Image (cartoon, rainbow, N blue to C red):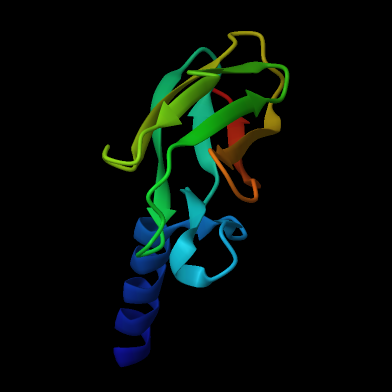
Length: 133
């Protein structure tokens, strides 16, 4: 029973925390940033619209604006395709994902690239899995 509870707690934490990109920005860890995306596949039906949140994880000393460029595989659409997260703004970015009604079933990638005003860019991706309605 303890093992089951531990497994459930671990899986719940993975969903909340998600995946992160490699670090971008400055040289030291406190001067950089990472992009957090959903850890598990986002499952959607054909013709469905959903919201997904990505998060900018800033180091303690990272105080710069970051431009996010978002692209996706053909068959799904993502809005916005570009946004700037200002240094003084909340780090959450809400994406609207739309699956075409005639999209083939399967996995589609959403790519997120973060470019700071100065310093190294970083990128990550997450998967949208299209299932039948």
